[in-house]
Length: 288
Image (cartoon, rainbow, N blue to C red; front, side, top):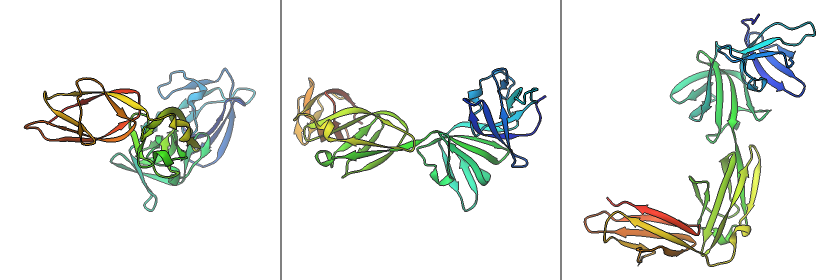
């Protein structure tokens, strides 16, 4: 009972139990109501949930019952779907969408959705994760599965010239009233400078700006972090800001940015920026 026609899901209103579909061959739009008895199938013919039929997916539909409600719908097995695309680029002049090292074409007005709203190709950034659906070398739809938002910093004066740490991998030098684009999600944000600093959890929401007042993280100063250094060469000399320290035990280091240098005979000097923004930490240093 499933037809061979391909339909693009443009809307799935689960409260009203209604699918809005676009027939790919004709561009015509159709509305299909469904019910608890409607059979929803994945591309292999296995039962799945209606929530799987998200905007951007390409499906085939079956017959309707006596009340006009859809009896069966299935994700098409004639299309390919890449669920976690992060390496992509767009050449709008040539009409080329590149995924990794492969070029694909797309039609004008290709379906692009993010969190229920329509997007343009120019809205996509390298911070986004995409689900891309296509057939052959043509892209049929693009859905932003992980989007991006902005983190705006206020009252930055105390921390300017130092760094902000967002999560475990993102570091950026702090400038006056700066704004950062970040993938959506919840992050632990830490700042430190000149003996002051702290951390807090921040949620970045898709398409929204989150404001963080750094005065709320300043706290009472000066603060020190107890840093335990482990060096893989016995007798190595460790200096912080040019001053040799005894690192046989944890070393109290003032919150902020410091220069860390380690030297040993017959080894190359090791020099790094040391960013202290927590009460304690362990740093392992390997010399070469």
